[in-house]
Image (cartoon, rainbow, N blue to C red; front, side):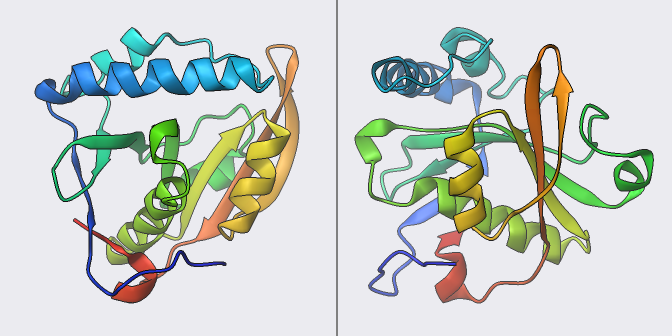
Length: 183
């Protein structure tokens, strides 16, 4: 795992998304989707508006990563229940956190926000006594990126006509210099 450079000060924070974050999340999702289109990545089935509507909705447990200014720079939904498209019944029975719909603002490229979100989840799962952090993707580029964060491929299955890759990483307590993100 390669850690971003840091001065030692925690500049980023993870917090539950609030209704007041919806506009900002829609903006960053719109920018991310435009970036994906320009760079030849598969579009998401969700719209930026739909993703933003999950902030503070009381249903989908969305979290945002913010800078010192408390402005959302990325988001993710953290579930404790796995879907069965890729994972087995036995894996679904294991205690885990599942990251879905993770987006970061392309304007923050180079800040390592996606890795910070992943490491926060690994640490949080460790603090909660969970065994794993899991995620799924259908993008080869994200498989490589998640591997750089310490995730391993569990299996690939076809779901709704496309290959879906299930990945996992052991939960663990990370020291403050590894975590780099406060809660």
